[in-house]
Every structure is written in structure tokens, then in C-alpha cells.
Length: 212
Image (cartoon, rainbow, N blue to C red; front, side):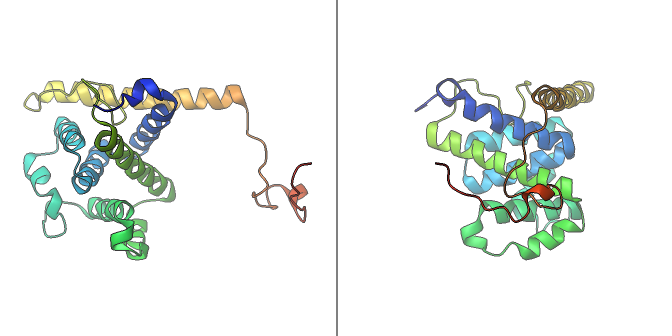
């Protein structure tokens, strides 16, 4: 590999992993893996395609759905919720090519609430981030990322798949608990000048002057 970014700049890698984990805590895990797999297909990241496909298989996604993912629009194996998520992930990944996101966003709002939309957007951002790290800087030896460091279980053993899925859920819950603890320790953040005066009336009609 070119640069082991985990060692050289862990401060950048950890937030990306946390974003991935938080998205997985809000959304269905198989859906996040499908979205990550589709994003990785578009980016052409071999390692990420393999990792997301293994994750999806370990969570019970059958091979037929994985094989048809690149042609999900023509296939009949994907739910309306999955199709909306896949359309949104393609728009965000290929913005210069696809252009307007309005149609994809409207389809998204029929299947996801606002929190889920933000979580899904975060999952797409994370997937694109992993793709660019691996393609641009190389894949670290033995790297297992994409929100978890849990080794993937053989897909043929239902009991092992179930245990793997539960372990990943616990990891996501732990990430959420850590974030809640951090907020309790750090306390609420101070008001920002761009926040609405309805929330902070004292900020109304105040001019933001440069320091000095």
C-alpha cells in the first residue's frame, strides 16, 4: 500500500468509522451493506466490494440479490425501500453525472423518515470515503473496516451468521453509548451564529463582526 492511513492519520479514520457505525445503528444492517456494495461497485474498489458483499452474505442476503445488485432497476428482488436507498446512493456517488437529486429524494421520502434519510446519507458518505482511501492510498494488510472489525462468518452456518449479526448489533449499540457518554461529559455545545433566533432569541439582529 502507499500510506497506512490508520497509523499516519487515525484522527481522520476514526470519525469515518463512527459515522458508519451510527448509520448502522439507525438503519437495517443488510440495507447498509447493499448500499455500501453498490457504491463500491460504482467506484470500482475491489476490496470494498468484497467486504460489503461478505458482510451482506453474513447477514443473510442471498447470492441472487448480490449478483443482481448492479441491475437493481430491472430486477424484481429488491423492495421499494431498498430501491429508494439504492437510487439515493447512486445520486450522491455520481453527482456530476446524474445531476439533479430531486426525483431520488422524493422517492426516498416515501420510504424513510428524516432521521433515516440523514443516516442513509451518512452511510453513503462513509462508503465513498472507504472507497477513496483504499483506491487512493491502498488497502492495509488484514484491514477489516466499514464500521466494524468483526471477522466475517461463513455464510453457510445459520447459527454462526446469527451470532455474527448479534455481535455487530452490540458493537453498534456500544458506539451509540460511547457517543451519548461523550455528550454527557462534554455538555451541550455553545450556540452558533447561524442558529435560528427562534431557538436563541438573543442572537436576533446581531451583526457578526470580525475579531479585533
